[in-house]
Amino acid sequence: MSALGLRADKESIDQLLEFVLQLRKWNRSYNLVSSTDVNDVIRRHVLDSLSIHAYLLPGRMLDVGTGAGFPGLPLAIAMPALDCTLLDSTGKKIRFLRHIKRTLGLSNIHLKESRVADFQDEIVFDTIVSRAFSSVVDFGSAVRHLAGSETRLLAMKGKDPKGELKALPKWLKLLSVEKISVPDLHAERHLVIMSVSG
Image 1 (cartoon, helix red, strand yellow):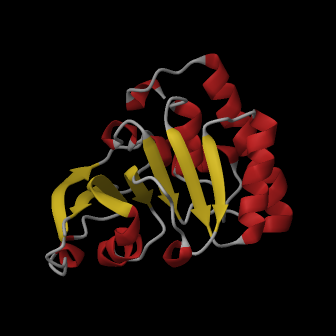
Image 2: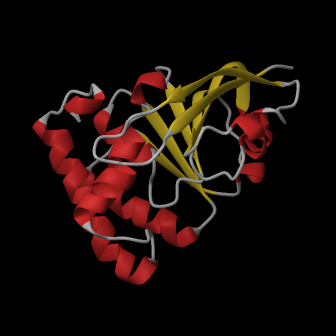
């Protein structure tokens, strides 16, 4: 965690390791991730999730299509002041995350079982993040109704999505594309940062 610029306190590390162990256990029945090798899960999922922490705005974060809890759950563990809503339409994934919330005693996460198109919230989110969408345009379109003018949209991508960015509609403003470095992960990672106007 320190390689990512995060303070690595013992409680957070213990919680992240317990999360990974529970993920391996539940994966037998729930098929949450493709590989359950501990080092692989830590590198490809946990550290990958934490790599975007510096780009989150303080306040409320929404993780759209969280699946097994990525990137929202590791971020909630590492940043306890962050108010995190994890959204997914698959019931078994939300059941797993409820178990994790109880087991780890996490008070800063809220779990919502819903399609993003049907999801509403009374308060605008400061940051909306996802690594589940096939394109940045699909992501922006899906969360437009949940974003205010100050909301930052973070789309986690592998290779630099230059082709996708050419198709951005006028209401979706590109703020920057950041190259992300994940320790021990030998693959390209980029973060597309956008906002909604109008």
